Every structure is written in C-alpha cells, then in structure tokens.
Amino acid sequence: MSDFTTIELHTDPRGIATLWLSRPDKNNAFNAEMIAELIVALRQVSADDSVRFLILRGRGKHFSAGADLAWMQASARLDYAANLRDAHELGELMSLLYHLPCPTLAVVQGAAFGGAVGLTACCDIAIGARDALFSLSEVRIGLAPAVISPYVVQAIGERASRRYAISAERFDGERARELGLLAECYPVEQLDDAVQQWVANLLQNSPQAMRASKALLQDVGSGVLSEALRQRTESVIAGIRVSAEGQEGLNAFLEKRPPAWQ
Image 1 (cartoon, rainbow, N blue to C red):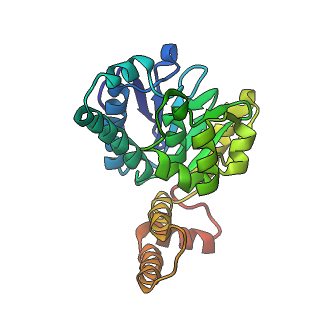
Image 2: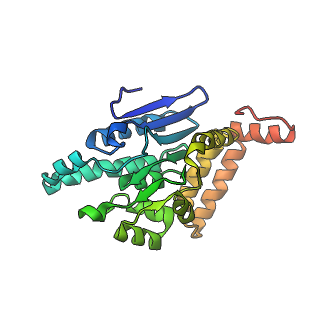
Image 3: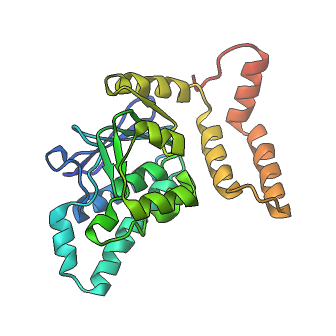
C-alpha cells in the first residue's frame, strides 16, 4: 500500500477495505492532493481481488465539506486548459469509485457538500446520520455541480437533482433517505453500530456474486429491454452457476451448511 497524507486505506483480514478521508482539521475538504491520492487508492482496491467490499468514511466531525477554499482560490487563477485538467482528475475519481469492481458503502456524518454528494452518489449503498447535512452548494459561489451531476441524477433522479443543484438547499439525512441518496439513516451515536450491522450482512454474501451483480446492474441501467441485454443476463447466470463460488453456494444450500465464504 502507498503512503498517503490526506487519506487512509486499510484492508482487514476479512477483505474489508476502509478508505478514510483524513483531513479532519480541514473538514475533509477536497484539494488536488486528496483527489490524486484517492485515485491511487481506488486503483489499488480495484486491482485487489481479495477485497470483498469497500467502506468510504470521513475522519472527524464531517464526511467532507466539499472543495478546499485554498484550492478553489488557486484554481480561479488558472486558465481554461489547467481547469480542464483539474476537472478531468475529479471526473477520473468519480468514475473509478462508481465503476469499482467490488461493492461500496459510504458512511456519512456531519457535512457532505458539493463533491462529497458526488462521492456518496457514486457508492452502491450509502448510510448516514439523521442530522447529516447535504448540499449541492456550488451555485452559491458561482459554480455548477458539473462533474458529479450524472451520478447525482442516477442517485436521486433528474427532477430532484435540478431542484437541489439550482437552489443549493441543505437537506438532512432523513430527506436524503427519502430521495434515495441514503439507503438508511440513524442517530449519529448509532452510526458505528449500524456500519457493523451492514458489514455483518455483506459478509454473508458470495464475494464473486456481489461483484457480478454490481457489474450486471450497471449494464442493466434503467432496465430498457433489448436482445443484447437479455443475452447478457443469461450469460451471467449461466457463468456464475458453474463457477467455484456458485457451485459452493448451491451445494451449501442443499446440504444445509454455511458456504465457505462465511
């Protein structure tokens, strides 16, 4: 594993990778260094077949307050080409997280503003504190939630995305759950216990089957039927049935015993 200064990446013996945003003194705000380190970390996780799933968290009081002010000030002095390179790096981060082969779980407390909403939307599952605060805050400072917008639309829908991107309203964990950005929300003091419950549940599942399901559902998208999609679904189930984990899971079920991955 690489040495990082703005993030932490830990993988335990069970294959659970935890990626921490670790600038608590800056409320885990993004800057170019953090984006670059997150890209490196996600590439490491993507290449590691032993990782069963990834948990994305923020150290300290807040998940992430969005973009770092000093970084934004520096970006304002750059020309279009340099800003385009910065945007490309952020786009690479979001794409890597969204397309990570293993399942991802975001855990949100405190503030999740701007790009942090994008990180949350890119994860397969997100949970958070009831009093967490979310905002697509870019328009307040004359910007737009551009790079993260496709992922936000996928998470909460086009209509709600327009509302919150244009208004920059803040909304709490309960509202985030209603919108679909969070799967569940909890009192903040119960959040760590909830994480352990989610971990225990995910550990019951075949690592290969979770990866296959994630990849398949990204291809399925909104579910528009086509002959190619039908063939894709048929090949997935046929392939996984004859795989080692598929055979183990079916045999364990028939023999009424826990499968090997548990």
